[in-house]
Image 1: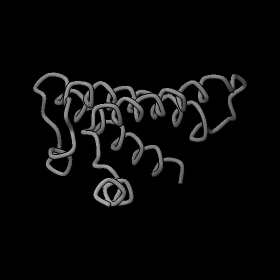
Image 2: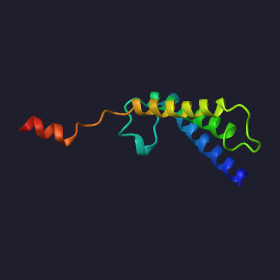
Image 3: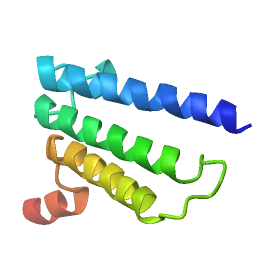
Image 4: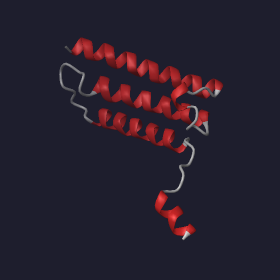
Length: 107
């Protein structure tokens, strides 16, 4: 079971890192995110940081057969993953204001 999870996690981390490299090197984003991403290089850096954090968390934390004695590394990986998601969020276009604010200004 652990082997299946390790392979699936390796494929996911590799795919996320490849998309991040494409974002940093070429300014490319996946088709499902092209309309939302304003700064593709920042999005790529966030993707790379998220991939590194996810790998650090998964391969040094829950997917290790003998439980690790140093618990700080998976926590650092989780924080890196969250920081990568935060960078990706910063790279998106700002959303529109809610319907309540627009209704108040027109009334």
